[in-house]
Length: 177
Image (cartoon, rainbow, N blue to C red; front, side, top):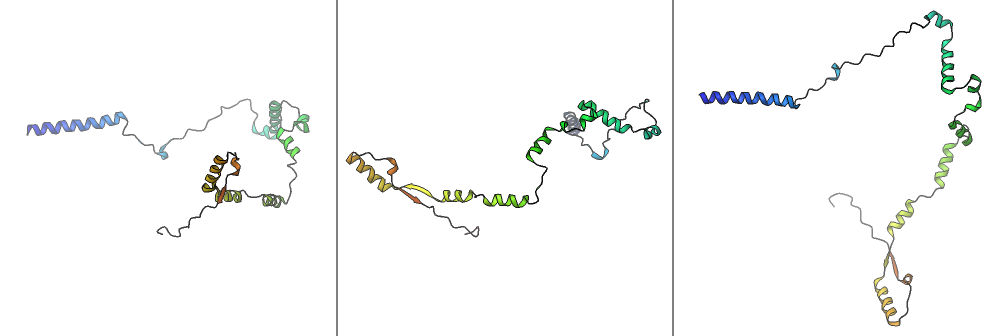
């Protein structure tokens, strides 16, 4: 009985230590609940005591002056130069040269005509795959024998070639045939 209690106590200590080792090793991780996550509060701009009261802001047109000031700071230009044609961007110049501003109503028909006039390369590929050039071995061996016997040298281009079309496999209609 004493041994039984001793074994029981050691097993409980062992099991408790295993769970604490698992927690310290990070095996038992806590999953974060998305609904309990606290969002960061929005940033607050400190008050500027040099601002005018809202009544005076409405009477003055400060927004336009701020926009103009920002343009002058960014581009370093006066109002007269901002409105001139000299300040067009490179992209606008390219679009003007390409005449992209003139739109045609029948652009779809033009594209369809261009593609209709093109020849598809799939026909050439299909013909190329179906034809194969095979050397006629019997005629080639006769030609080589005659060449050795007579001593005449003939060109390789004279080699007899047979054009064969490969046999097409029957398509299986069902997987069990």
